[in-house]
Length: 486
Image 1: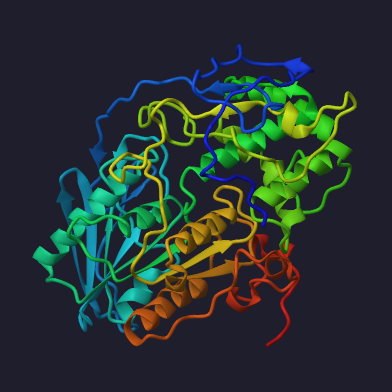
Image 2: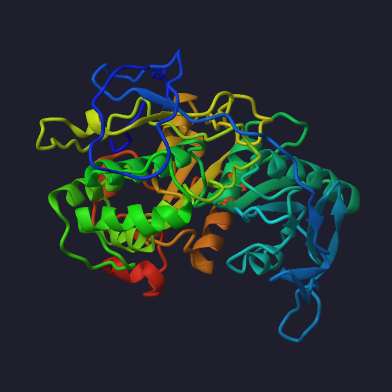
């Protein structure tokens, strides 16, 4: 297994070894009196500070038009056939602060798909958009209606997405008619929304779900962001926690990380010059993003060169400002999978700083802005993920598989790896196949093919994901060896 923490281990505090080297940023955070590190030789726990929760005033963009760079774009009109004849009817509106779109084919089969969009930053305008990957046409040409919401808020607000979708289901019932089957499909943060909707009992029934590149590990995404940065700091000897401003972090700390570790300064699948500590850094990141798998070295070079994971911890961070009472992330009980001994005899696990989430920032309730996903599902779920993603790592699928299995629901989950390193880097064919295979499972009992995400030997196979990946050489797909011809 590549996963490195046990969610059930209690948080705990102990004395440890200080981090030497260059220091950037503010003083260490206070240690919570009731929390200790999981090991007495580890660093003392620093608790993330409590922060103010606040609401914002949201502007709703007109759903009749696409929203492009703050301006009204193309009008939302029915799809047409090759002769230019409409093959659908469209509806749109604003319901309780959320814009929505609905499209129903002329030959509607009685089923509907609710599309869940991904993270849209912290801007104060919410807007609705069509499903990605040409799924709009896939749905309509196969007889399915679809509906999408802007959600009532931006930021990383899962509750806003779930609530808006439940309300949209009622709008659909009122304006179109009650559907025979309700499906969910969506991307990234939308996967977290889907995982939450499947576990809520709010009077809306779902029949199947197809999350793509989803945050199915909930808080573990933020833990990864913390891990990545603290690993780079510890292995380079640069202390920059608490995190400074992005300008200071990028101008002072990050260049020192790269110099000490020998990591790429631009996105590249081919690189050399890693120091011993740089190799430990890369190997830990590979392990905590999903383990040894095709394209793992290339994905590291691609994402490390972008500085993305360094940036996300210093802005907002991650869409939580004003939404949760402080940072969600934690590494209090993290036993890093690839250890390292420094010249003074200290180990990586002993040396790395230990950080606890802010008080009351994590909650088991399903109505908080960022709820936990437990795997308590009762309908088929066909999930997919690109192998080299660091925005939402492939390990999210592994956490979800463990959660679902722990609930005794493993037979209801099928997962598919896609051989690409970009975030949500799918072809239209992959997205359509995922949805249509889910429908066949729900309506005809034909359980689709998938692949284990928990068996290290399976995941490390050079051909892992070939069965589900479109054979095109575009984007980051060129990082991967071509698959054998069937």
